[in-house]
Amino acid sequence: MAILTQTQIATLTALRHELHRRPEVSGDEFETAKRITQELTSLGADQIWQGLGGHGVAAAFNGAVDGPTVLLRCELDGLPIHEISDVAHKSESEGKGHLCGHDGHMVSMLGVAMALAQRPASGRVILLFQPAEETGAGAKAVIEDPHWPEIRPDYAFAYHNVPGRPLGEVGLRAGPSNCASRGMQILLEGKSSHAAAPEDGVSPGMSMASLMQALPALSNGTVGAEDFALATLTHAQLGEPTFGIAPGWGELRVTLRCMTDTRMDQLMREARALALQYGGDLSVEYHWHDVFLSVTNDPDATDIARKVARSQRHKLYEMPLPMRWSEDFGRIGGDGAKATMLYVGAGENHPQLHNPDYDFPDALIPSVTDLFYGIIADTLGTTWG
Image 1 (cartoon, rainbow, N blue to C red):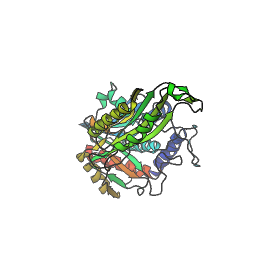
Image 2: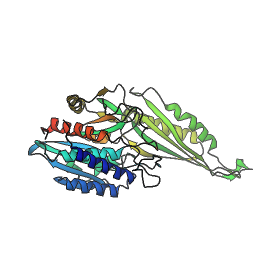
Image 3: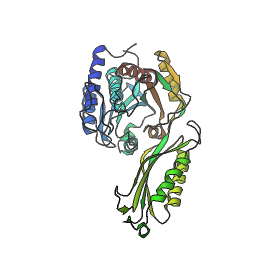
């Protein structure tokens, strides 16, 4: 049974296009948060929190009696990527785009808010619009916000659309489901010299060449294995782009990726050791960026999602392997909630996430709204309207 009317679906689709035209990147989501707050206010949320961990927004819809808190999370931020799509709602912000589908995730949860005009029978629903998901900074900031204890859930659910899978298919996996990852920035400082007298300087060139081979060699195993590790070079710069100067500094960036947080701790130690080993006489600094914990889906929460998806006759995909990409949802499960992330197909031939021609498929809005409202109904006793 569809929970949304055709008028509501059209309203949400138009709002999705509006959000798509005005993307804001991680940490800058002020106008997006303001727009979401307007919608939540008009939909009669019982309480709204603003400015969570930056620009985060959360809204409560309270049941008639006490019970568990069920949190549904989506993301506010876009990406610093130029959109090349020719759709009418193409981004109007140069160099920025909703090229991961967070605009669609937001309106799906606003669809749930529409359905929550009929409140849960017990407990409460929290809709969380999280900032800075793309950098891995948002969930940590939200959990550290002084208002988080008022919000902290017993259950938490989220989803991501997945290009390459059939449209509307629901992917499920208990246990590890998204890799931990973090960016390592290595700064090497020596001494520049005239290119005619390189012996009078200290060049990072050979150290960088060695590290560019040694760091990727830390990769091990296949995704799904407990010892899986992947080190991917993403940037390298050696001195200035000239011919007259023997370089005195260099920078490397590498993304580390593991199946578990424990394995990540080990990989970080190995990468640090290599940076110091090959640094030689150079000054060596390293810094960590874009820190994502692994996402490990709770089996009970996953069973709830599976039961609801089956009852609504969604096509199910029991995922044999975790996703190699990371998601900033792991911290919410790690904070004590029974949490699970769902993976909803965006179409087998759909452009990939973070591609400049990506656009969220509007056809997912009503089916995802049904799915998450059904999860609320199963967990809190809400009935269809």
